[in-house]
Each structure stands twice: as structure tokens, then as C-alpha cells.
Image 1 (cartoon, rainbow, N blue to C red):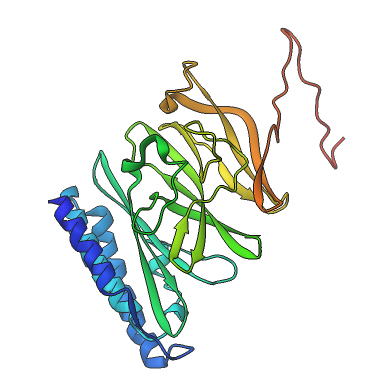
Image 2 (image 1 turned 90 degrees about the vertical axis):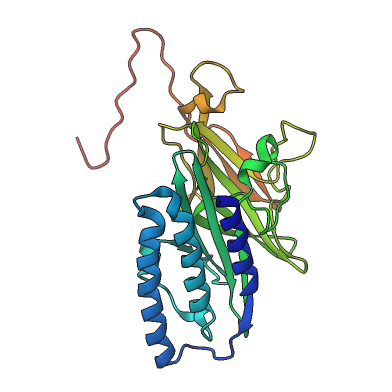
Amino acid sequence: MFKKSFCVLILLWIGFSATSAQAQELSKDDQKQMALMEDTLVSVADSMFNAFIPDERPAYCQKFVKHLVRALKTENSFAYNFEKLGKTVNIIAPTDKSFRIFNWLVVSSAHDIRYYGAIQMPGEELKLYPLIDCTKDLGKFAEDSILTNSRWFGALYYRIVTTEMKGQKVYTLFGRNSSSPVSNKKVMDPLQFTDQGIVFGAPIFNVGSQNSEQRINRFIIEYKKEVQASLNWDDEKQMVYFDKLISQVNDPNRKYTYVPSGEYDGFRWENDQWNYMQDLIPVQKFKDGEAPAPVPLKGKD
């Protein structure tokens, strides 16, 4: 039943992937109409996330997609900011506003979490790229794969960092995936726009793959379900930081046992790549009975 519904959802995306948009700004009438459609979207999204019977949530997801596409068919809908909907569904854009991503997940059972999304482009012709979650099919090759919108590492995005490589912009997406019942993942996934469409993943991390001699195409940390782990961008230091993880049972193959060690590593963008940086915040180690020296506080005696 779910597979059938998912196929219908894909067809809905494809069927409305392009329409005309000529005006540079929304007219007052369109603004009012978009506001009404947004109220409907918020209502349907509530059922999509919280329907009492989880098996019904994918059907509400289909309904949500229909209403979202209908709203985006409005001329120059890119100018509408969806302020109310943004409190329910993730809507994120890079600083240059060259696109935006509508992004959400649907929990249809304790062990069935699927991610959804669409990338909307501005312009006279509205372009809408559906994002089709294939995370569970990637297995151990998730870091190595070059993907497209029809084969996407599903995630809920929380940050976009823009860099340039050989004059072309690279948008590194930071996201979280919790579809595994025993572990969570956080990902840095490079996004580029090409003549052939959008591409996820690029060998721009100076970290080698565990499966081959090549570089990885996306960076993923995986860790125990019950713990918190960081992977984010620091504006002040202009670099990425993330928790260095260790296995609680000393088994590096069992990622679901990984927890933060208290140390942080990171990446800095230099020479058209993400350069790995070790021990950003090293842990002080003490001998038995030794205590750390007090750290003076600024402005205090």
C-alpha cells in the first residue's frame, strides 16, 4: 500500500514540475490567494505529521503535495515566504536565494520514516525538483555515491553553506536522518546545479572512503539513537565542527554504539575542498589524582 502511494506521489511531483511565472512580484490578489492556500497547507501538514493512525499519514502527505504544487503554480510564488508553513515544514535557502528547499519527514510507523523534499528555483519558468528518498538502498555506500534528485540521501536540512570550486558554486547541505531504528546520522551533502540537472555528492572532502581508494562524496557521522552529536558550521571560525565519536563497546563496525568522546574535529574550506582538521577542542588528560588548573574568568577576581 505504501509503495503504491509513494509511486503516485512521484507522479504528482513530475506532473507539476514546471509552469509559467512571468511577474517579478506577487500581485495583491495572488498574495491573498497564497495566504489562503498556506492556511490549508498548515492544516494538512498537521494531519500528515500527527494523524492518530500512523498508516494514514502517507495519504495526507499526498494531499499535502497536491496543495503545495497548486500554491507553487501561482505566478512568481518564489516571492512568497510561507512564514506560517515554515513553522511546520522545513523551508531553507542559501544566502544568495538562488533556490529554496521544502523539506519534511513522515513517520508512518516506529520503523518506517521517509524523508520528502522539493527544490524550487526562481525564474520565469518555475522549476521544481522532487527529492526521492533512497537512503535505505544505499547501505554502506552512502558516503561514496553520486546522487540526483530521483535518488537522494534523505535528510531534514538545518543549514546551507555556500562555497566556490573552480568558479562554480557548491552548496553544502547539513542534515539529519533518523530513519534507522538504532542510530541517527548527520550529513554534509554537496549540491551542485549542472546542465544535466542537480547533483548531490562530490569528491571534495580530503577523507578517504572505507570502501575504495577514492575520496568520499558526502560526509556522514552515525551514532547511538539516544545521544546527541554535533555537525555544524561556526560563523566566527569559518569552519565546520563535529563530535569525534567512539564506540562504547570498542567495535568500530557497530555505529549504533558510537557516542561523543568530548573531542571535536572539523573541516575548513581551502583550495576547492573541505580540509579535515583534527582536535579542534582537545580533551585535557590528567594522571590519577591530578586536577585541572583553574581557568580565570574575564572581569572576575
